[in-house]
Length: 202
Length: 257
Image 1 (cartoon, rainbow over the protein chains, first blue to last red):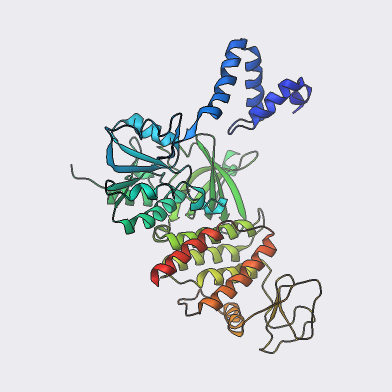
Image 2: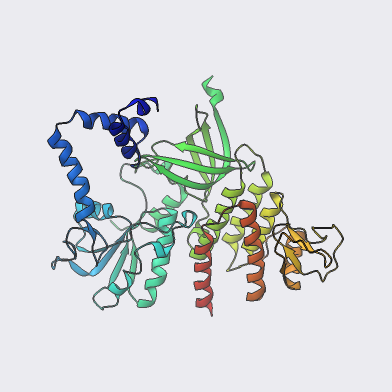
């Protein structure tokens, strides 16, 4: 804290602002601030412009709720994708992870979080209501719930499944079980049980 | 010396929060009823041996390493995962609600074994029950009881006189029923139904969780209102998960109708 007090006020302000970012403690903020000071002016302007640009240009896609520059987003505008499947994910980063893997050719829906009752996050705080109108046409045959296998993720899946099941659309979950490179002897009972239930014929 | 730094604890996981990209902060209630927070280093990695065991609501046997600031989890083994409970949205929402209450009332380095036993018994009751909506009010009443805030149901909370069975005036802030002569000016007094008082007295005398529920919707609502407000008063903050529990419960009851 002494460094922050003795630093010139523009530097102290930069440290304070960086310290507000998730995962950045006061020491990391100080290191980043002094690194930025040492950078050439053009590079610092580039960082500042990109931060401002992200706030000005990025919007939510009106269809899938993913972050995008154009509405509808590139993925929702792609006519070659399978319009019979929608994969529901927690965060925009999950879309990137699935796209990177390259096996999925359907559409997405981003919830921007999961139900977390103990933190006061209920279904109304997520983008669930935007999903339901997308299911009202006959084209959608399957909804894949691709949320993380946590207690809160499971609660979200069960809640969405409850909403969708009266529509007669197939609802599936991503398979759960043993990770590649993991060891059977250290797996907990739930993981083993899920792996057993999701076993496939070779 | 390093051997003395390792110690074993049995407990129930109240909540977990992610720290950075790899680590998880685990809050649990130990079997002696005290709350403790421990760090599970590297638990978020896909091949971690800890993550599956430290899920919320798991009963765990954990070996802790006493660190300079907080203990870190050295080994952990789940004893009960409450899988049936976690697979049912209504029971899960009730479990999360009671977990938030336990998290609110349990204190660090403050032993209260009855609180741990009550929490564990409640999770077992929710796991074994079939849509029994009296489990949560029973838990709320007994939670107040084991934490020293049990509502007074047999004597006037103002003057101490033994009440006859027709006293229907309840004061949340004073913590119980009032006789007809006492009229506290500072606090709001609410009228409660005879049946609601009977249920509260039944909760007081019964050691076990109710196996069935035959209460009318009105009495159930009044019971919940008294207990919710009492808990809100003693906890001095809103219980975040109650909205979700009520939302899910309402939906389930509509489906049954």
